[in-house]
Image (tube, rainbow, N blue to C red; front, side, top):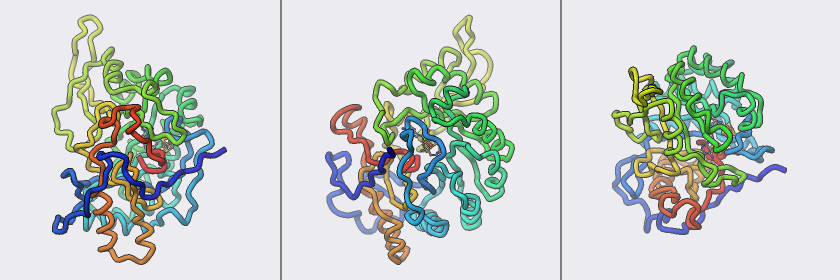
Length: 375
Ligand code: SAM
Ligand code: SF4
């Protein structure tokens, strides 16, 4: 049985947190992606496919999802036009390519090469599960990819296979090393910790990342899995993650500005087992993305485009706007700009988990799963 991807049509809000503005976006505002709460989106997350070759338990059901038909997914040319509008008309300053798994898209390297030629100064990064990265890292770098994030939740073959339902740990590790060798650094590693499965690996993952100068970022598990198996009890909170790490390491908040980044960064020193105090210098940094327990919505700068060209102002947004549909209807760039601005204007104040409380009836899990949005 495969789970159907429920695509929400514009739905009415259930509470003020998600409510659309009374009236449209005022005229006379600067040409940027502004919202009602004074935030400006400058960081664009673009999904190039909904397909994936892993089945991470916190993201996808074992049988996968019903993939979009090819004609529903943005073509390379459509991606170029949409990114062009974001960068040239709407103040987008950085681009993250994601999915699904971006590496399963055969024309990925060409897409990046054209993006780079058109936007020489634009930082272009990519989030990938690393399967097949070994073979493509060099080409991606030559095409103009700036940097890479690789998702890796376990260094143990068995646990990795249990979490991703695929025996590909060796491929991912080879991919990470090759990305580093190709100059796609600083490499960031994304890890989701699941209670009772890989949570105790936290210090080991950090030790591994520090030795290689990778920046490890732990991401709190969010209720964005297609099979709706998320539970508050199953997720590891940022506080628990810091506690797990502090057995071996001393973490001190990084004094550099967070600058809208989702991860709270900490400088890491080794903990002396005898004294319990920090010993030696800073070994590197670790990030914790506490979307659930310590949300950072007030500083969010992200705008998202799904693989089929829908604008989502938030991962948890229950409204989406059909940018690709408008583009395919023959619309002028000015109309696309307007739709994008209108979509961002009604960005919710927050995702609702903080507002309503976890598990509260007021928090409604969105219909789309992480892989269908582009995390
Ligand atoms: N397939 C690529 C990958 O895994 O890196 C890119 C897409 S994936 C949706 C992007 C990121 O979202 C990954 O780092 C993944 O671990 C994370 N992710 C997926 N489902 C999640 C969930 N329910 N909660 C928190 N993070 C999640
Ligand atoms: Fe695929 Fe990434 Fe989701 Fe894992 S997290 S199933 S690799 S899209």
